[in-house]
Image (cartoon, rainbow, N blue to C red; front, side):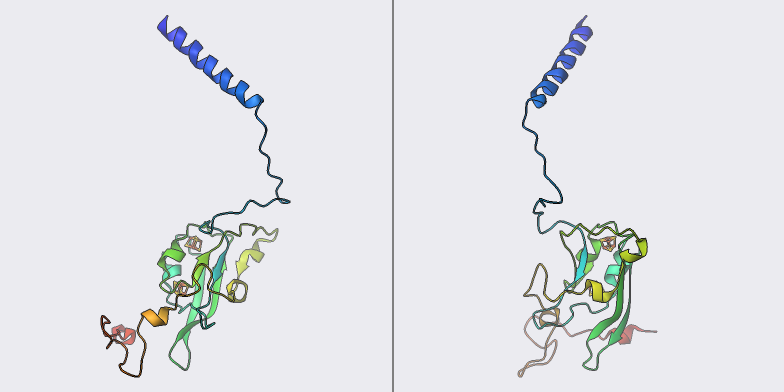
Length: 178
Ligand code: SF4
Ligand code: SF4
């Protein structure tokens, strides 16, 4: 008997809830006329940002492509005459991207960032392959101040790289090559 009462109570509660919602004013957002502002940390379209001097932040270290669980980032690295590394080309296949944000987490230079822009649908799947010129924006995204090279050691009039207080000697990555 107790079970019957329990079931009837649950049924009654269910109906009461449905009844309450029947008389509530519906909340309808008229998308795309109204676009709800999304939090800055929302994870959608990916961009490549620039440092405060206007230089590309990406140093083509391959960390983002290594961490990407679906292998949708690829690039080729090169060295500028001043020794700075850059990506000669940089490609993201948004047809595979699952917007997990791991690439942004892994990036040491804050170059790659996910933005709240989710309107990224294309009828032709090949149009979801974005090249560097499609990804590169002209500002620093979420952090306009950060400049990797200021933290990774700079040469000043007083001291060289790695000689400032609290700095370590820079590692020569080429010495690790076989
Ligand atoms: S958000 Fe995730 S899946 Fe998309 S490119 Fe970055 S690491 Fe890869
Ligand atoms: S976007 Fe960041 S993690 Fe990816 S290659 Fe460039 S610097 Fe490295």
